[in-house]
Length: 343
Ligand code: ADP
Ligand code: GN1
Ligand code: MG
Image (cartoon, rainbow, N blue to C red; front, top):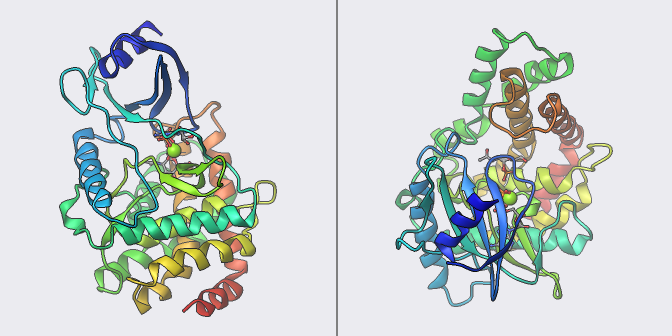
């Protein structure tokens, strides 16, 4: 605790009253610091995952400036705090990289959707985020996590590890054998010039949207470490897989999907191309498969990437994503019809 107070003091000297863990992140460590007159968010960036956190900070500064100059922006992103040494980060004696951000007060993040109105808000907010950044040249941003969302890369890694690991789960192995054929769908379309590189969030799962407690509207999108050039399809697939999975059955909820997509596309239609519509279904199917593959490979490797509280947790997480992918596949015709109704 003393070490944390010392670190918090680098951003807000002398006044930390309480420091409590925040969120359920699987990569970084996040804390809420309560000071006498304000609150702020303190995060230790996992440098085993993000090898060069300075790149994250540089991207955040660029997108913050870009969004700020828009008159009609309906989303804010948290401001980065400067340390006593005048830097947007602090390196502690262990070499750990810490950063601090303004706390956006009177907001909540949801782990499961409450109402369809929440789903509509989520679709709108992701579409608005993409729209606000649609005129920012993605080449200006750094690649903070090379290989992120490149499914063929995860599949190749899985095959490498599966050959060496003592562990094996029959269901997961069969799903990967069956769905491995879809792994390259988005990357091939990208290489063929069918899908353009844009500025993406990278991790727009439900609990990274902040809802205003009173109006129930989304006021901010947070957890911006993976903002970088990429396909908006990674984001759409990731948002839908996190919002549409029924927690008990792992079934894909078409009604929630409809609410999100309708409101996403109402924003995104200003920049969306025909082939971007064509690849919506493949993305919705691919991203849960990809996440299942990432969780399962990490389980085989001994849980080195995603935090776990017990050794089989990444296996359970993988199974849930694979069940979701199966449910999406079973509803392919209905999902495609829904997408066509929005063109
Ligand atoms: P993690 O990588 O741990 O998911 P996040 O940046 O998503 O890190 O933060 C975890 C949680 O902390 C969020 O889900 C949200 O509830 C809260 N939070 C993070 N940053 C802010 C902020 N700037 N303002 C208000 N709440 C925040
Ligand atoms: C990781 O740490 P968190 O929960 O924000 C992961 C995402 C996964 C998510 C699954 C950089 O994000 O890709 O979708 O876990 N982030 C990274 O819960 O790998
Ligand atoms: Mg988060």
